[in-house]
Image (cartoon, rainbow, N blue to C red; front, side):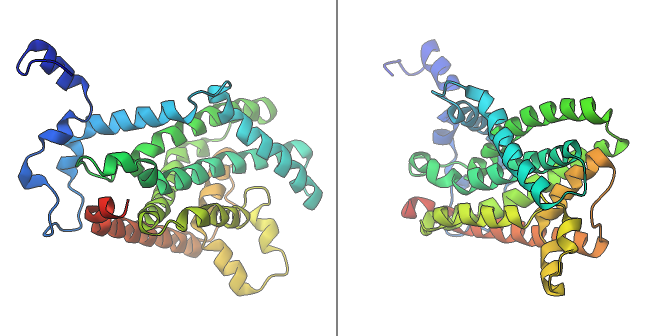
Length: 301
């Protein structure tokens, strides 16, 4: 930059550069062939500043050069609510129009969080290929940083939904206090699946074309616009019903609706713990795959 090393201007520039710390890492902490597949929490703490920078950058880039900006956080779920709300009324007439639209709105909002998390985390490595090939830093920061913009979009839509719910139904029950737990489970499940696909997409570029189809399948396999009780009352084989209830995202959507209605649809403790076990297995498999493959990312990018 033209600054004389050791001058006041030089050190002011070095402190302002979020990637300065990347070039100052001691050699003993660099990746080698003897590294084990574990997360160094102390190392992540040292890179907290980089994590904040990446998260803020993702928020800015998401709506950069768009005329509507954060209004897209409202428009996207609103379009889906309109489409699937009408479709839900045509298929199932067991509830009033307002109740149907409120229920569909809840499903669409939490599903938007799930789908954007899976999609953003899955594409986080390929979208940052220029960084991966230049400097060292814990690569797990890239998938994690993408979660902030997803949460921001969710928060905007959630606040509007809460206002509409209060207008039609009054104050939500005390079950709303379970919302942080539901969100944590949603992020945990989405992150595990996203990391698995993010790692695979570095080596197999076909994965990025599979993700939209998989999300579409999971959308219809989750009670977003049709309740799980309606699906389970259909004339389906028992194995199909069991597989449907083991879907981790089914528990997330029903858990989100439980926060507002105080009723957990088709609750079954066995399937609840089973779906949590599947989420835990996906997260473990995705994380191990990521960490084992991390040191060769630059070779495939």
